[in-house]
Amino acid sequence: MKTQTHIVNGIYDTEKMYLTIGKDSVEKHFKPYRKYISRYNIEKESLVRLQNINGVPNLIDCDDRNKTLVMSKISGKTPAHLTRDNLKDLIELVNKMLDAGVARHALPIRDIIVDNQNKLGLVDFERSTLRGSIIRLDWYVAKKVTHYHLYRLIAQFQPDLLTNKQSQKLNAVTRIRHFFKR
Image (cartoon, rainbow, N blue to C red; front, side, top):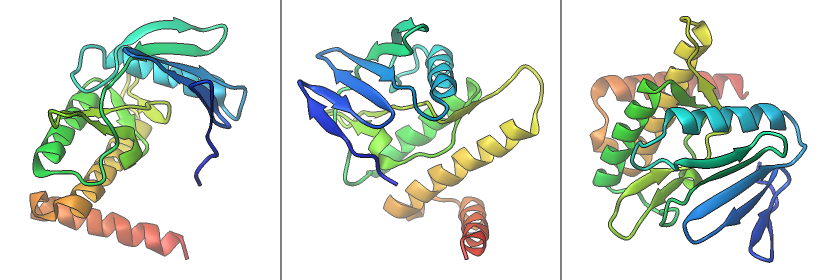
């Protein structure tokens, strides 16, 4: 389900947020919409945990009262195709992200940015699971979900990069998903 986006005076206005893209930074203001406080807190904590990882925006400022984040801008655009090098970069980025305790619920291509030097970045961390200080089942599941979406992208753009084991995992989860969508 895609939300309607309106651009007024350079501000992207969606059902969930206002997004102002500047020359070097992006300001994201969460509107009072379903679970917006949770989404704000998760994105803020994700950016804190991922601080200084190449390819992820750095948190510059936050306003907890107004639910606004200011982060560095990842230059580039959403690619129509992911090259082998892009996917290798994405695999490395996802591994660093998981090591930092951030697992994404999805990896849509619209959240992937590739610049003119073919460097890959990842944005939009509001729908993530954060690893807690104790071992929890939800973290284990969240990591598996992140890997599923990573494997799905690899299969879509460069299927020969998948190992046999990764391909088997992807096919098994895809069959399960299709079974429950009936």
